[in-house]
Length: 231
Image (cartoon, rainbow, N blue to C red):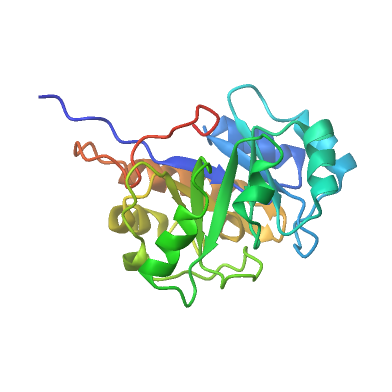
């Protein structure tokens, strides 16, 4: 029996420069994220996002990240930016996230949470196409460069999980082998400054992920993706 090939999906988040987006695409990154959260140091305006959108080539997903933004702001981004996916990083309820009729990822803050808490938050969003497990506490802003205990990641059948928080080219391979998540999401770990990505770090990160993708025949935690928009 032939073992299944494993490929961990990669998302680079907090993109603010067109050249960084083009470099990420050349490296084969699956998705890039632009931040619209008011409290983020990597926040871009809608005018900036419209320019950056033009740098994103076909077959690379673009994710619009929000954190407790008003619904009208989310609708404005959808109308002008046309993201592949929305990502909600705050206390948004399932009803709030679903009202836009757009596929979405939901972030779960792992700091101070036990496994039951995490599973409950995942279960509360049955229509989310995936979940981003980050190191921040619930209600706090991500992108801090801090990591959490990867041993606390639950096994949730059929729900793609992305690991974030404190990932770098030096530890992402270890993180993948320890957690077997479906994807990884990095921001500060590939930066020279907030919002400014480093080409060398981006390349090293991708190389490390691919090195960890061992052909061992075991599926990633969370199983296959239910939505073609997250590749």
